[in-house]
Image 1 (cartoon, rainbow, N blue to C red):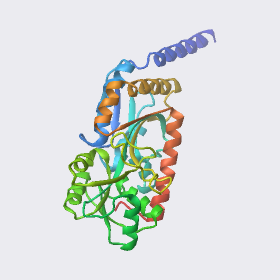
Image 2: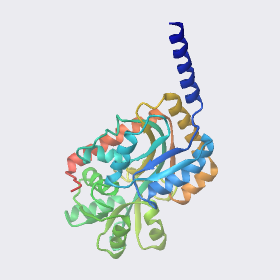
Image 3: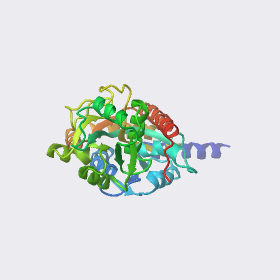
Image 4: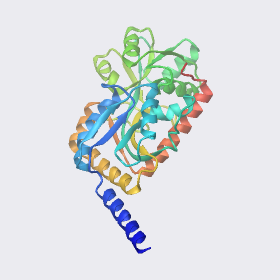
Length: 318
């Protein structure tokens, strides 16, 4: 009995030492989008600072496909030891309802770590559209129901569902035209083949500055640093309207709390670095941060919100 007790005490001590030594090897950040995407840009700006805070290098692994579902499944199955993290996003919140047959539950199978970044969409129109603000756009859409076309980066994407949310809240019927990505949608918007788009700020800012597109509003609850002169859609008469392309760190469920707390503290430290703030601002990105509990609440709210939009609009990905 004494030998067994001594062995158990030794094992407990070894486990405690291993956890207290976290991290003692590189940490992998998995994201479900390709190099050059907004997620990739955010990840590669974050990891040097976060790795510096952790005292270990961080490695970005791009596993694109199925709207981040492939990456989500891989991390959900990874060891819950703090060495494999997922850059969760609004895509995961949307797919919780939109994708059928998922092998994981985004709200239940991950432990939230911290919010990272948010890219509000901008509501932009082709210059031929006479509307100079959101209310004028609503009036124009009501005058010609089913004729005003808006482009998006694809079925089931945040820009697509931003348009559906706008239709529901404004009581209008604009027509969705899906593309295979934001660049193709913006090309047709510039050409006037579609007239409206909810686009990530980083994709259209240059065209707004050049006068090729007109921005009517941003879609966050607060004005974006990328275009602080623009009112929000909520300020413009649709109270409660809020959409963004957001990213947050999550870990496999069961990751020890002390490791989650360490990751959260170091993420806050990294996001507070003036250099990272400046790099984010140059890309039209707003830092999020916050506690683990705040991210958990936000994820639940996002899943519920997009579920309502999907069900009400009948949006599908096929």
